[in-house]
Amino acid sequence: DRGARSTRAATTPTRARGFAEGGAAPPRDDETRGFDFYDAADVGVVRGPGTVIEHDTGGVLALNALRDVDGARKNRKRVGRGVGSGKGKTSGRGHKGQKARSGGGPRLGFEGGQTPLRLTLPKRGAHNPHAMTFDVVNLNALRAHVEAGRFGEYDYENPRVLTMKDFVDAGLSNRKIKHGVKILAGALGDDAEGADDAFIKVRLEVSRASAKAKEIIERAGGSVTRVHYNRLGLRALLQPEKFPRGLPKPARAPPKIRPFIDREGTLPAPAPLEADS
Image 1 (tube, rainbow, N blue to C red):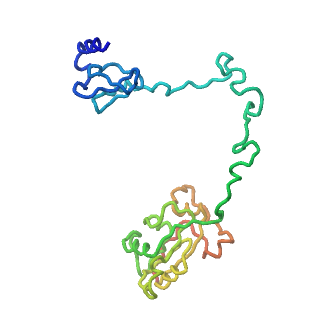
Image 2 (image 1 turned 90 degrees about the vertical axis):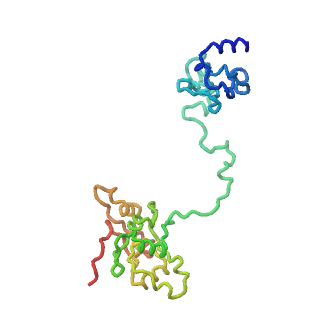
Image 3 (image 1 turned 30 degrees about the vertical axis):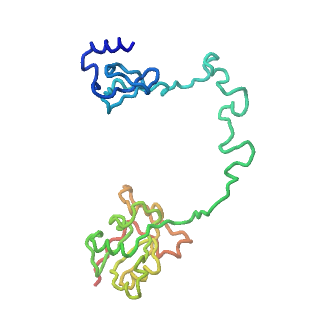
């Protein structure tokens, strides 16, 4: 009874009784399992599996007391081991039929012959398998990176050619470029006429460029060359170290893309231009 239990706990050492002498007792593990509480004298006794220990009230969690709760681990179902196992003979599959065969059963999405759900829902939108995704770079961001020295030492009179690899190394473009980089005028295209004359001189090799952005760059004395790289060529341009046996040959542009580019890209990236004489 409770009186005998308190007398027995009083004869145990203080260390065995735990640290909850002046605090609330941890939850009880018998009968109510968590809705009743132990007395302070019960702290330190061996707990059963799955007992909740209150650390805030002085409960101590020992590594040798960690165990799964009852029912957490179940034995694997073993079929075909005799009728006494409950899964013998037909192994729980019943007698004959499509589902009783090895590898049998209806295909995924089959609903017994009625119209499946995937066919009852309408199609929405459209998908263009030939669509190309470009990483967009605005002229304002390009000028800010050049003036901040992100491209290294820059000659404003005779600048070197900036490729998409330079954009990635400078942090101007995302490293996970899918099909290339496209230059847009951005806010410069919305300014009044003549406000874009102060743009810096740049020489670019990118996948695409808007008409307004190309006009602004050429007005400042620069140039934009639209080059084509396929997925493998773009990877070789951005990460040449991934090809220890040599870079692949540049791929030819498909006929449908040729009106939008000036030439195929070169591998490796073009070297810096020499100073004009």
